[in-house]
Length: 328
Image (cartoon, rainbow, N blue to C red):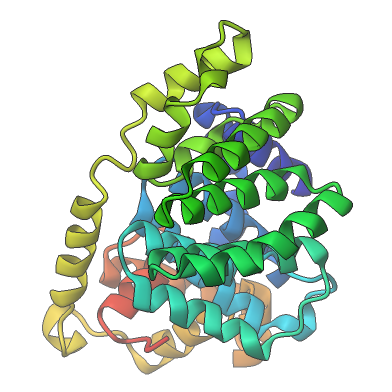
């Protein structure tokens, strides 16, 4: 499972999104059928990142909301520290212009103990992104300068590149063009050596344009030429306002009463199963908790899928939240 998750991330970063999706596909079956909470969180986190890379922001948000909730509710059953799903969820909210939701997601981290340095760095980078979005570049730079030294010392090159990029955008907001170019040139240098590419086109349109104007990307060397072509063809952030408007419209259309929008309402037992799925329990655990056979649980799940018009666990949870059957 972890190998497939790692391969998904590697191919995604290399901009091989179809190969990444192929490695992710077998993992989704584990989520649908029920798996250990730690595995569930990792799969949904990777799924969310891949969806974000493909510009499918609502899919990314649904997967990451699920990962964050399961990671929080089932923390005592996870033997490792889950990935920073709340931080990446905040980044997805920023991508669709939902700044308030991004801040709320990051503020939820205040009550969590984070020991993994990678997670700490990711949380800090995303908080800096939030400050830039809120037009607070000075505060962002204060955080980023310390983070730059930390990521370099830990040899976390991907986070170092991200830190340099966000730093460049903050400096651009302050009109410090020379310092901005220095940070961005260094980001390109570190990324070229490590082979990173996809992360550049996941940045804001403003930052992409700044990168395209750098002398380094006028080089005919293979990595620089490929990145320039990718940036020029990238359209993910060209419609930033459209996804945000679409998301707002979708959320505003959420019905107040779920009974009015289901041809057949969920039974009490189906609601109980749905709540246990929402809590991150696998089918066998649900069967034990309810005192029924696993086949009975599967039958309840089939009925839930049919009534909600979905085909997967994550889709069922997302649909139930839309209908306000589930409140969080």
